[in-house]
Length: 79
Image (tube, rainbow, N blue to C red; front, side):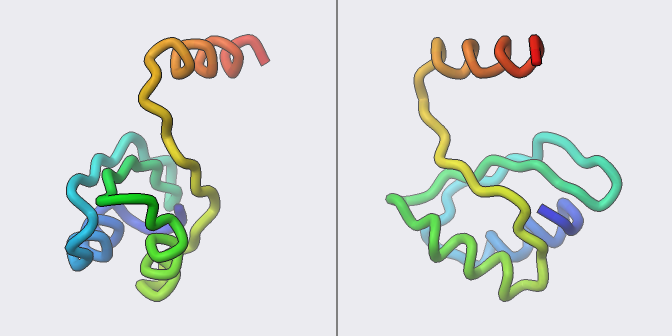
């Protein structure tokens, strides 16, 4: 996401179905974050972020499987 952590939190804080926002990293004007949603509302999330003037660069649905997360992290580290 292109923007600032405060801008991301402000945009998502207005949405009743966003229950949690965690900023993971910031590199320049690129922000990485996780958001917990009440249901699969990815299209609405993307629309809200773009409407707030933030540049959406990537949107992924997270899986809660610890093993899958570990495998993805180790695969990225080897690449």
